Length: 401
Image (cartoon, rainbow, N blue to C red):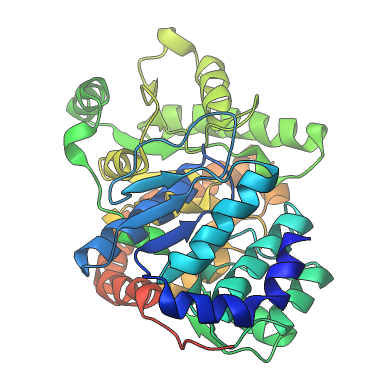
């Protein structure tokens, strides 16, 4: 109801904005706290904006089971509230913020929630209609995206800068709307790794493994690569455990398990500890779970110490690519293939069904290990151009309806 009324009242709000002093930048995340991927995009954006002299940076701190952690570059955490309070605070932002960045991520195609996807697109639309400089930050858009999201994109104000974070998503968006689409790179590439906060226990373990002549494999298991199928999720988890045992025995690999999402009862952290136990737990000195609740900048720094990675989290793969660590990926939602096109890389992925065969999964990692020096060279060669594409998220679009 609020969005419909605000859209009708947008011309009036636009006039009011002309007499009310505006300040600051609002970042609207795709969901509540707990995802290091979302936090990496927010922090990367916030710090890059501050470097450009824009601010203060305000995070529209959507609710979750836990509070938002302190993120570099964010000056104010604005909690939306409920009911009338929520509407009043959003109205205040509509009237006061010079710019708004809606972090679309993988949440504007209806994969997780059609209402949330439509709401994110609608928020970007509302701010543009009220006169703010509005951007939907580089997002994925899958094959078979929800019809409702395509309708929302088709009615999007021309004042919204719509960014796709990979070429494939850009083409899919253009198939749904005649709104201009700019292909950029993910905002998380802007995140600076924080080496000083990498836990000393992890560094000591890595050094001890290297002293024994072993390679370091950073690993993340993500249940979301398979939706609503407990049996298939369990088969994939079992494949991870068996593949990692083979790699430890046959390829002189040591496994550093890196959680990248702390939401829910079956979070990455829960999966990490279960995987660790399947590998022998404390009896196996060749495996370690990254200690503590990692910040996104720390996770990115940590994977820089690995030779390669195995992940089902795209933003952990982005963290790896940002520091030159080649990631082998278990894919979902059509996100990873477009990411690797930015780097001109092939042979880096398996779909979840194929990855449920431990021989295939171990084979993918072994292939990436064998090619790691060539892959690292290619990644680092492409990195400057990818950073340039990521910075394009920050460039203003037009202001208008």
